[in-house]
Length: 126
Image (cartoon, helix red, strand yellow):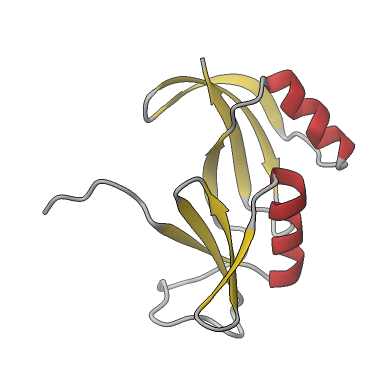
């Protein structure tokens, strides 16, 4: 088997429209429509799909739960610019800036929560 990338992840949320708005406005991720009327946001070459517990897209994880995700998004901006941007959208920083190790080396990271309390790490490589 020759796996090389992640194509998409699925977040279980309580309100898809609210999540789309947050990821689009705060993180400047473009919204796309696929499979007729499903919505997602593009993150580089990958996408984040959204589903609700009431309307899951099968097959699903064993226990899809809003607020259970913990993911890291890589930004190109300096961490100070990111902090200012988050503050302008009234997004509280939960932790950071802190030094972390990512898939490709040392990161500087800030942590925030999305509307469903998923933990979102926003990082840039040194």
